[in-house]
Length: 231
Image (cartoon, rainbow, N blue to C red; front, side):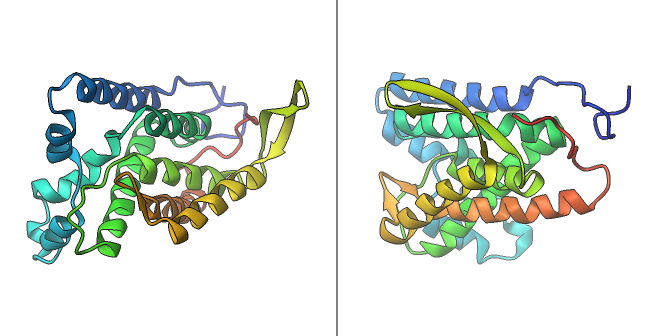
């Protein structure tokens, strides 16, 4: 049997990194709920503050590794409520399984953290004088969605669609599903810049970074398996 990066049917792999990200996010959220003063404790430890991040990035690049800048990445695992957590993990699961199978475990982890952190850095730049903490995996999740679209622009996704009193299974073009999602993110980004300490622009930034990264994954041989079966 050929390698998973060949042209034969790939060997299925467990999405171990995806499961790990979800488990860590859930554990941190439960810890938030159990903490006496969950909001202050976890926001201070893991959320990034745009003004503090920009202060660090204004220094020489050799001094960029500081607690304030590293929170660009730790903020990816912090959520404000159950809806925020479940929404992010649901989208990450739908698109992340295929992406992790396509690029492998370590590349998937690298993409989620790096692109999510960069998306948060763009938000910090946009809100450079803000002292409000920003949290959420949205930048990383949106980046994975962007990678999915860039790697598999013509795939069809199996969805259960409500038709009256019944659910009908249908295969819908991924471009249509993701295009609709992106349009909603763009509208919220323009008309609702921040809601509940969650920056909507991180969605847009992460998605665009993901699409750009997928282009390089496609053109560099051996970086991604592009012959996976449809979802």
